[in-house]
Image (cartoon, rainbow, N blue to C red; front, side, top):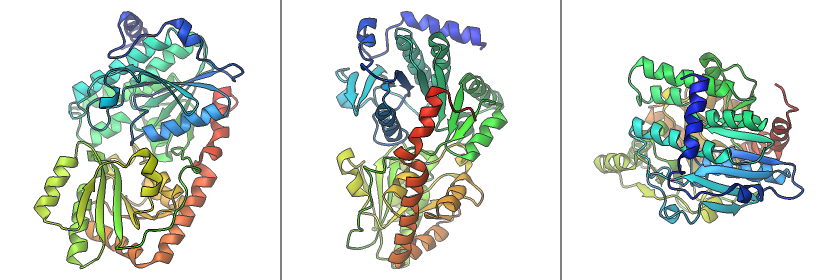
Amino acid sequence: MTGTEARATFDAAQADPHPGAESHDNEERVATVAEGSRGRVILVSLYYSEANGSAPILRIFAEALSELGYSVMVITARPFYPTKRVFEEYRDGSRDVEHQGGVEIRRVFGRDVDYNNIKARVSAEFGFARAAYSYMRGLPPSKAIFSVCPTTFSPIAANMIARRMVARHIAIVHDIPSGLASALGMVSGKPIWMAMRWLEKVALNGADHVVTLSDGMTDVLRDIGVTRPVDVMPPMVDEEAITPKPERDGAPLVVYSGNMGRKQGLGIVVELAKILEQRGSPARVLLRGDGVFLPELKAMAAEAGVSNLSFEGFTPDDQFAESLAEGHVFLVPQDPVGASYCIPGKLYTLMAASRPFVCTALPGSPLDAEREASGAFFISAPGDAEALADAVEKLIASPELRAKLGSSGRAYVERHVGREAQKATYEALIEGTKTS
């Protein structure tokens, strides 16, 4: 698809109603720019209101931009991840327009999404970008547009609108879809993979600036052919909302909390629980969250016959900070085949809370580089449950070591990852004063 063809495709979408969302006239849109603000900034992201994944990070980011004096509008979808279904409280459209934390939220797309079906996933991602483009066409000029990848279609929509508005476009890359899709076996055949890489190159080269989460991700984008200036910015953490709390008394608790998908490589947690039980460890293991891999994990646990492993749903937002104090050791497993294409945001949340953790990662990987930079956690070899158990038991045995790692992580967040540490860089990106 050429740039002209892509633009024509999105132009044609203006006549379409927003799937599952209300329409809003231009007069209402104009009125949303706060008097005395430094200008409007738009954030285009498929995810925003979910409890896990990129959504919590993006909420912190949007609110930080509002604190800088910008009128921030988030254009997003009705939340559905990771359950595949739009959340019940959003299905009727009554929450399509909201204001939270100084940010205006417009949900312009609502569809159940089967993320196990690549065709359904691409259709939904394209549908969201088309709806976002259609909505933004009716907005007055804005100072900057931030788009979030995934999906790759969002930067394409943002490129077209930014040209119309003469606005800066900054693309934030949280995942590299072509890499993850290939590594996790979600696409078959080199032509599809090459087409995905080409689309990523076109989408990101249309931006004024690109932000990635790690040097490893930047290297992958350069290999794809992305030539725009790139800044490496870890996922933003609200260091004031997440503060260190003392460990809970009682038996040691080992926790994984988050999405339960394939890229997390969570099968090793079941193996870990079995090994700890066989070793006579008093530790209990908790898998907290939801996702497409949850039924398979429960089946694996039942087959293993472990009695020290339990499952819980996601913790409500207002209890999240307190829940981090429950675990003595946290787990951040990751399938190594996707390690160059994403960085788990939970790394930085755990650091902010001064919680020690163990990642499954290879030496020299992006996660290992973060370990060296922060001094906040251990790594163990992917797929080696015995090595993971050794690392967990080492931490369980030493409160002093847990405290040392936790303190290092907190200090790293305050220097590099916290809301205050990153505001100046994003302000420079918006104003066009940062060029490298």
